Length: 75
Image (cartoon, rainbow, N blue to C red):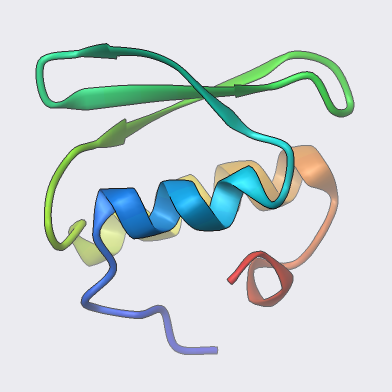
């Protein structure tokens, strides 16, 4: 699977809302999203357009591990 190279933080947050995440706070250019599914889980997303590829991959890995689904199913 190819990770999209032009995904903005706002687009990623919109995708993650479908998986039960909500925006819990924002400090400067970092947005923290939280879910209560499978226990409480927090992820910090930089508010960049686009998100760097390595950062996006790390975020997707962390979320896929917590939700026990593949990165393909997240996107």
